[in-house]
Image 1: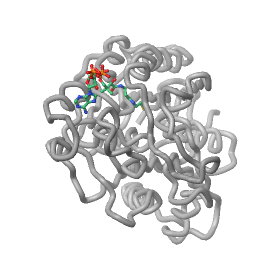
Image 2: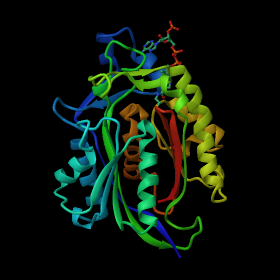
Image 3: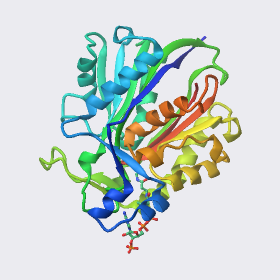
Image 4: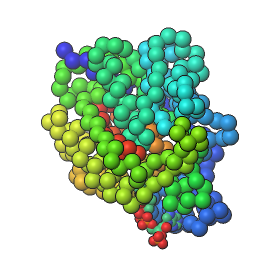
Amino acid sequence: MTIRAVVKGVGHYLPERVVQNAEFEKTIDTSDEWIRSRSGIERRHFAAEGQTTSDLAARAAGAALANAGLTVDDIDAIVVATSTADLTFPSAATMVQARLGMTRGFAYDVQAVCAGFVYALANANALIVSGQVRRALVIGAETFSRLMDWTDRGTCVLFGDGAGALVLEAHDGSGTPADRGILSVDLNSDGRHRDILYVDGGVSTGTTGHLRMQGKEVFRHAVEKLAETAHTALEKIGLSGEDVDWIVPHQANIRIIEATAKRMQVPMDRVVVTVQDHGNTSAASIPLALSVGVTRGQIKPGDLVVTEAIGGGLAWGSVVLRW
Ligand SMILES: CC(C)(COP(=O)(O)OP(=O)(O)OC[C@H]1O[C@@H](n2cnc3c(N)ncnc32)[C@H](O)[C@@H]1OP(=O)(O)O)[C@@H](O)C(=O)NCCC(=O)NCCS
């Protein structure tokens, strides 16, 4: 018998304020046309002043619990993927725990930047299959608007804020890819690429810092590495692109999403795309897209879903699951 971490519920939260591309035309040398054609982004949400990552995360978690028909008393652990925790410490996850009124179990953050949700899913899966917890909340939440240099047109138009969450529950499986739940994981990192995507602040500088990116270089790595990690995760369980019902990719750039789907030989009508509405929400982008994909009626129980992401580090990876 195999224990599987099965998705019991999904939910998301987006801050109220929507910023259209045209708003940037007032402050920097850019255009709606450039942003749309180079990235696929049309709008993004920005958190209100004083609204923090743990606030967005707790709201997404509440939606996922409601969707699962569960309460916090049913949850054993909270794993939050974020690079924009409210404070250097404690973790955003323990703040979410307090916001939800959860007084048992344990909570912690995972930091793998835009690959964070894939890492957090892999981590929560390990907790469940090893029998340490029965149910886990896995959340991706970010306020990347707080890291933007508003004079850098190459980055500030690309990112947004938001949160998405899944409830995972231990179920008995047969050990075959026909099982529901997480079926395969592939994680990678290569610290030699630190300088192409990083924040120039933190504890060592005593500042929050701003996001710095060599867009073209990140783009090149993304196209190469995303299809590869998805392929590896599928291959581990004897599957290929043909078996995939939905790719739910990290939503950074429509051109990266399209190139990855093409390399995986999966048509775009089997890819959940939300980048036009959310921009790049880093670790929140995959759970947001999963939640929107379910709401739209795209992802259904039994579907084979492949998530893949890459971000600062570089860190990248893929999780294959049956919904
Ligand atoms: C950032 C990105 C959209 C830029 O697209 P690109 O096709 O590579 O464009 P380039 O970097 O070649 O820039 C082309 C020109 O547009 C300019 N440009 C950059 N941002 C601009 C903006 N917002 N508006 C108008 N022009 C802009 C550049 O200055 C450059 O001008 P130059 O040729 O005079 O120097 C693209 O590289 C990308 O998406 N990279 C990956 C980013 C990513 O996914 N990061 C997160 C990973 S988690």
